[in-house]
Length: 195
Length: 157
Image (cartoon, rainbow over all chains, first blue to last red; front, top):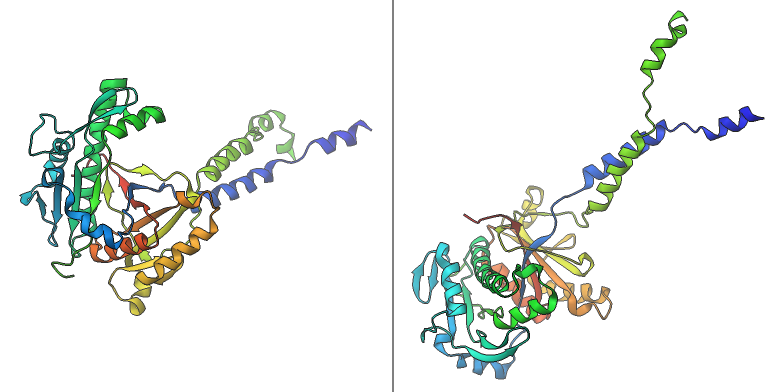
């Protein structure tokens, strides 16, 4: 019975394409290609009563004050400022390349891969915003500050390892993070300008 | 029947479609792998702000979402036009966030609970007042790892 055997083998594959098309169209319609991305941040833990009194201990030279009012105007170190220059100014504050006494002090610390180097871990960038500030402006400021850190880390990574920070192995990233630790604090909320 | 008798014409007409399902399946698998099913129906309109320093959220199962924006047209009679908070499928208040975080955290295994991330999907025109309230609630709930949802652009201006 060679004839009947041959008939069994040949399955009509045309409907399979139809089914596959149907599924394909379903997934095409339901798919959302926007991947979830955003700026990662860590909130400070809720302060306890005894910590509240210690807040003013940080020295003035170690604080970089960024304020945004309800009209989305920027005040950096109590001077009106343009957001386009914020990144450069923040980089100067974090790294303090010329050891300016007005900018944050550095400490000597043993870091893997680098030996004993000066570490800029004293500086704190403090962002204060009003309840009326728009979220867009707030995120732009956050973005510029994170960008300042990322650029400094990238520069150091290029100089030391010849690669970008993101491409380095975890332990080398950790070493660079020790030298430039992300220190953006968000002050306890204040209500100045109303809603 | 004379048409069917013409053998030469028939041979030209029959294209082999056996490889068609293969191609379609390949596309199908691509979309199946890349697709992200929407878990909640958004009741608020959200246009995320632009940023250059965005990072991808890696482990989706560890992420909880908080949506803040102006309610859609059909909900505006009930909920007004001021930005509102949406958790899962419902409009909620700031005071509900701590309970929501506790629930979400219970769903994770103990080892993963410290890695929990809260993604804040906030419309760019929202005022910071409500955002600050939400952030304070998150701090009280000790959900400190957060992610400000933003779209990647090359430059802001």
